[in-house]
Length: 326
Image 1 (cartoon, helix red, strand yellow):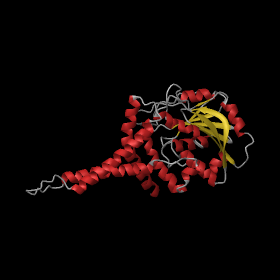
Image 2 (image 1 turned 45 degrees about the vertical axis):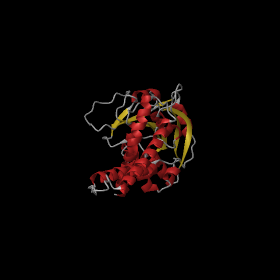
Image 3 (image 1 turned 30 degrees about the vertical axis):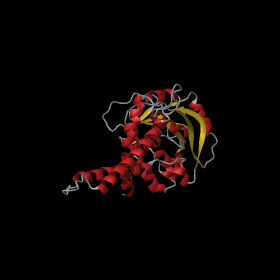
Image 4 (image 1 turned 180 degrees about the vertical axis):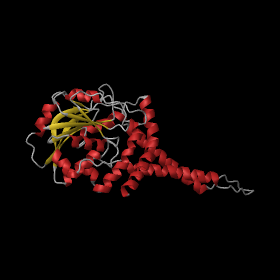
């Protein structure tokens, strides 16, 4: 009745995912490592492995569901752990669904520390618990996947390709529902710069807006973003740098009776822009520090990355708009 498809780039967490499924659940692991000569993945004997050539999770999931022959395909990430009894629970979730229901979402649980406030990275992962239609645990009817063409392989990373598929299912007249099965998504350490790397998703947001219009975010239950504030912060920063540079490069003419170091107007612009940048950056940093544990290491990471994120987010969005228009 159902095949589980798990795309992977060989992360060690895959072992726990497969172990939690057990030997009685048909599973296809899609090896999306770009190196065709990489050592074979270590998976249980009953698990089928197909290669997708390193083209990203959307292409990997397409390769997986097309290799399956069951009426339903359940997509899991390679870093989740289905709870005990998941196979039986997904069967109940899918039983007797109406023909116009294309998919069923599992309930995602993100365990957070109980002895302290969660870090910024932990809160980012916890967002999956309230997200709509994430492929961390999402089952789709195979005929519906065939009708809409599966995942859009123009999404190169694990971001928005699941939302894009859900919206195209709605456009095709299908419904999506939420089931009772539970899957745990542990928080992993992604490093000091993880929040900066996540800004690459702004390019994918441009693709979503281009395809579904400005209301796409509300259509998937998403909230507002800080992109406009990031743009204003970046504009203030660039203006301050340009104005200060102009002050430094402007030839100084010194009348004998009135020595003036720099043109007053440019200095005022530079100072005002720098103040605007500082206020917005401080507000952004505090918004990220306040709900966290406020340890020295976390505060340092929030301050440093809050300086870097606005221009990086804007650059990725501009890149995404350019690609979407092409």
